[in-house]
Amino acid sequence: MEIINWKELLYPYEQAVEELLLKFKNLDKECRHLGIYSPVDSVTGRLKTPASILDKAGRKHIAPEHIEEEIEDIAGIRILCQFVEDIQKVVDMVRSRRDMTIVQEKDYITNTKASGYRSYHIIIRYPLSTALGPKEVFAEIQIRTNAMNFWATAEHSLRYKYSGNIPQELQDRLHNCAEAAFHLDQEMSTIREEITNAQRLNEI
Ligand code: GTP
Ligand code: MG
Image (cartoon, rainbow, N blue to C red; front, top):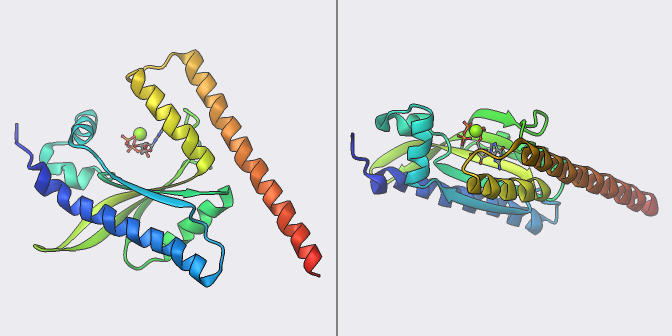
């Protein structure tokens, strides 16, 4: 078994998370500065832990020397939006950027997962300028509403407690909760639209 130098392996990813956090937070700041609506409500970032990397490598039969090419979410950024329609605006912003390359998009909002999970994922290649020269790393950007995030974080911690095997009856109820959260999102969007329309009429 090859011994992994975690400090060396993770450092570029830590740098990527820091840079991406700064960039997406700045996007929000810039919108406020320009007085235009910001589709970004909040941004968080995280580094996958060695235990979680090893667990995923084991599940997906990835050899230690292939971790960097095969595991795309060692660096992770999560962008939370207030409204469902803001997600597309963030996606467009990511698509138009020149400082990162999109390699894959996964739309779990249109294609909701069997669990009820909804989110928009973008896998990018992100170029770094390290002390040892240029290096490109993968990063995963998850874009979701606060309601989708409320469900996903709660479901994740519950699934963790059950170590993966949640009884079907509870899975069904969790699925219902995801639908309720999405209903909330849709209703908030409808209300927003009605308020915007009423405002427009007032302006005429
Ligand atoms: P992993 O699920 O990370 O092994 O990778 P994958 O290649 O299967 O990618 P996928 O797009 O399915 O999931 C990536 C990430 O989305 C996960 O690491 C979770 O953060 C999140 N995710 C996917 N499905 C679910 C789900 O059913 N519930 C929750 N809470 N999160 C999910
Ligand atoms: Mg998965």
